[in-house]
Length: 186
Image 1: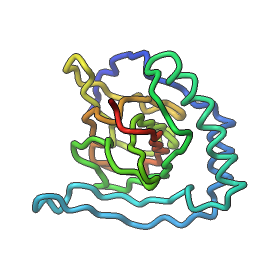
Image 2 (image 1 turned 90 degrees about the vertical axis):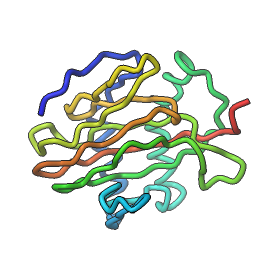
Image 3 (image 1 turned 120 degrees about the vertical axis):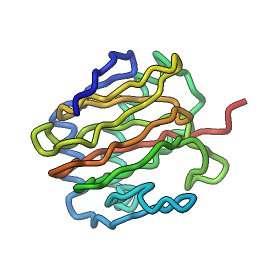
Image 4 (image 1 turned 60 degrees about the vertical axis):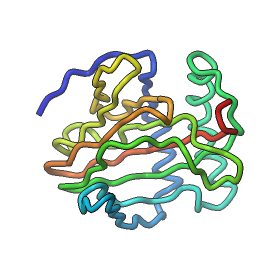
């Protein structure tokens, strides 16, 4: 299935060198299968997750610094949110049938007193590595926006934005997801 990618100021592109470095720093992290059942839906979320936040402080700092250079630029230009400098980071691996149905990221964080305010999703697989698995969002105009599937394609968005990851039909889709946190919106 092909979806039209609606261009947005919030699209970003991670440099190949940055992706390579993040993957290298996280290469020893184990992936754990995670399935979320919501309101009786046994297929609400199905993916495998690795947690860069579990890296030693020095290595996590390197991963965080790479992400912060993209985050800071886009927050300064488009959002101007009050952030606390902390990041929740996950590496997701979607196998065939892996998906995450409609949801929003806003809310709880592992940092007490903080909430997720900005979300980032970046393609860490090449488009030829998988079929399906499109990331779909609903923007402020009610348009359905699809993230491109090229290596390094990314998007930054308000964590209250509804979005979903369509089921992967074949292959493996790797994704970096990040949540920037801060105090509750006023």
